Image 1 (tube, rainbow, N blue to C red):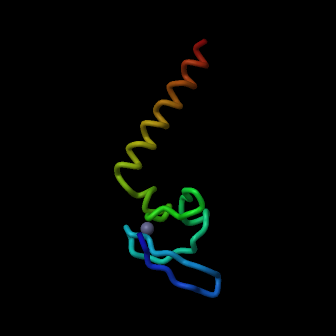
Image 2: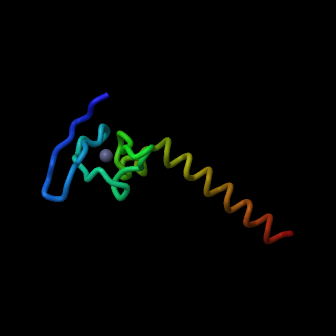
Image 3: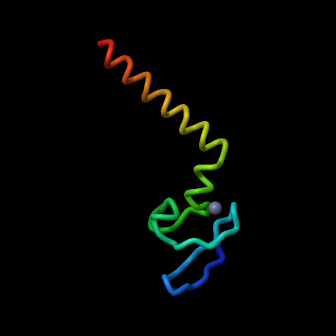
Length: 72
Ligand SMILES: [Zn+2]
């Protein structure tokens, strides 16, 4: 699958398929999978309700674990 790319003075940029913005194709802006940037930028992943719910469950689990450790 091809995706939109552009060259800037900073290097290659790829388009986020969610927000439609171009971002540098590196791990600072995209989660990388086998050296390729995901189709969504990190900001979009962080703003996605499903991802937020998932992160919240993860945080809940982590805080429960800490409480159990504190109680033990
Ligand atoms: Zn985005």
